[in-house]
Length: 223
Image 1 (cartoon, rainbow, N blue to C red):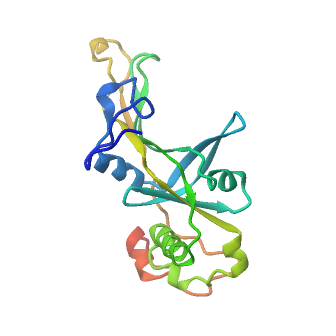
Image 2 (image 1 turned 90 degrees about the vertical axis):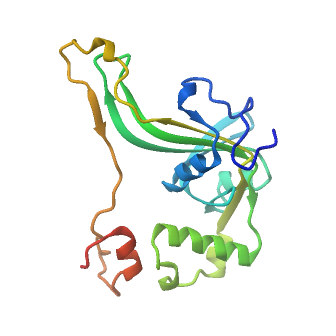
């Protein structure tokens, strides 16, 4: 692992972007902004020569990534031993419809991060980071929830990974085949975005209203 500067991850054999160099960035702020802009990631690891990729939800504090799962899952058990992992976060921003199949692409923001996760075993740290996760998903929600039982805590494995290396790659451009502008096919970008909709109450009915902090955070209408 190469020592990183305060503002950038150092490019090395593990994190260096080799295709589309103009879209690459090792700037920590850009990496963190992409990680924080979405809560779905894919965690990659290898067990006995077999690669695995697991989708899960993540959150970040400083230069550390966090995610949780069943304490009995292969991912948690394997990575809790300090085995290396790679974590990818991708946000799809648009379809880039060019005048040829070869030039058709997508606009996106992506990060690939590397490190060796460890299990968070301290009870106070576990509580703190789980609260941060739920407050990220639904502000004001954690204090309303029924407290976790001892059985639920034992069944939950929380991983923490110091980001040793990372790189970002971003495409935010129109089609790149402007030299074929006279070809009679529509070309341009179809934007894609993720958004929340009005909440749908559980089938058993509504026991209490949504918190105002949650409504404000997602700009949801009062129901």
